[in-house]
Image (cartoon, rainbow, N blue to C red):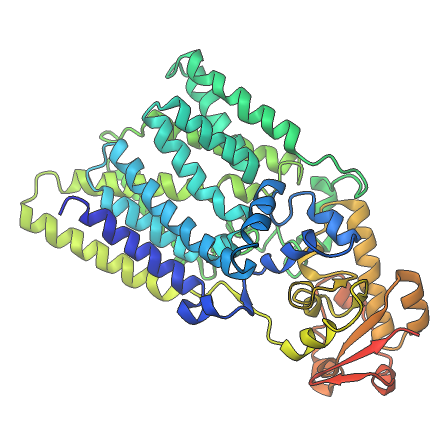
Length: 499
């Protein structure tokens, strides 16, 4: 059958997409949702608020993608739409990785695409919720495929989509084109198209200044928020985790069992064993150059080019898997057909057995349905204060604004984070009896407070894991007097109306 291999690969991608979205039951459960998708509603339908303004920076989706979701949400449930988009993105990765392998003349294109597809299964967080970051890998692979084919119109369109949906990948693509031109691999006419997506990016990037300047590298290093236990743990316990694992990209401990680490080790062994016989295609060499340059620049101009890991985490698997497949091709060149088949089947089975157990459900469950139903009965202009983690689900399922939420509390913009951090600290001071409820409500314009009764249990307080650092260490539990205030009892929660 002519298309049997790509059909098999797409079927595997579909299974991975379903698993990472909780299976059929996960698709059907409207309270199972991608983590950042919970914040998406802040940009829709709710009264203006500080958090809503923050999402206009392109967090968690760019304005273009947000507009697209707003349009289709008129016909399809928003939560379901994000899950279906997630699955679709998995399929795109598989399709373009296979086409790219074919265009690069890899003999084992099936294996290349399979390994890339399985790797995306471990990056389920990236694809969860169909957010902008989920488009990074498929748009990069699409650009590479069309560029290797020298289809100028197609790769320009891919770059335009990158500009609209996930700009860091556009920078990688533009860097690749510049590297190819400087190495005299392409004519100037093939470089000209970058003008259009870069111009589009300039005019579409939000130019909001009310959130202050961004933190620089030195400031980030000195902030607890950017280390393990903080809100944005860029700097981990070791170099490899710091490079790859910003925001759960899939580098895990111990490293010798990690897919990224093993891919790198195997690719390195192939390079050592066959260094005289291997010649990386110029397009992939330029991709490495572009990736390293922007990775370094992203650290130097910290947060202005977004997260450094985003410039290497999508390129590394492409390069490593190319070396592995090419090394296998050289190793099996003089072997009989039977031996080739046995070894290839063994490799496919081994990798599948290794990857399969690590592919998990990437959705979060917002399980406090009674609470959301009650909050939905409050006036539309209500402003609710709750534990930051509890607040994550409230706007999406109750249609009411929250003062702050964990999903929208990253520490990159100084003015914004200073305000959110202060509000969260004041909330915990009020929550645990160190300040008056009246003062907190009046100073922040809050109309209702949600209390989780479990946060006052002896075991919870003794555990001391209230929130992220550095706020967690500053929390002092004085009393549980807030539980004695009359309010609406909703299961484990109590909702108070501000005095």
